[in-house]
Length: 277
Image 1 (cartoon, helix red, strand yellow):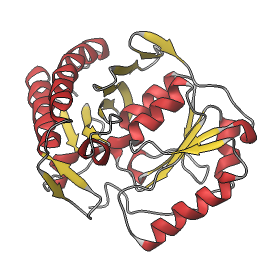
Image 2: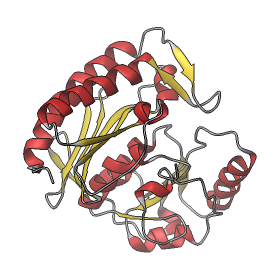
Image 3: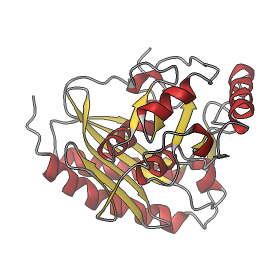
Image 4: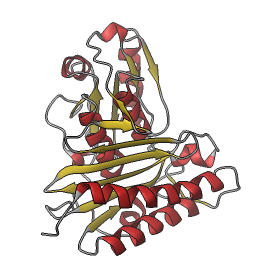
């Protein structure tokens, strides 16, 4: 297996992510060339492709033995398979719909997984200059200041983030509406950001207390998984079982107690696994 020095990997990735951030910052106010993927709300722009190319080219040059799972590469037909080998998992522009509308809540998400566990996590919003980072076992940071989850356990005091997602599938839409309706009178408030990675960062930073979502992809969650854990937060499957990066579902919260309370209330939706093909 390729040798991995997490600190070196983080340093190299940070330089590339900052360069990629310049591309996003420059493009967000301009007219975009937009293409549809799975539906009219599942979008990709030339910036998504340019950022992914920049990151994979730079990382593969520095770490030629490492593997990659990139959102646009998978969309182009590459397999989405996570092995024990060092693997960079990349979402070049998370919150593409926000980006298309020039709404400044969009980010670049990059993670390094080794032996099917996260070693490095980076989530960068270049518009607001929020750089979230984590190394396994070394805490979570926002712009080099340590962050931590809120520690909230009381459902009635919890600010919960939810999303509609990029699917008009009737079952999915019904699940989203049912869950928001259920939670609305039980929690302090419900918000939606349009970016799963940044919603996860809000849990890590203590800005909200929980986030759940169905039909994500591994690149939406790979960096956030580590950053939340290092911030003292808790992740699981929305049904309450162990978190599985390839299962396309997540419930993360400030505490295990709060996560378990929310899991009991959620209507479930089971998307096809990322690695099913």
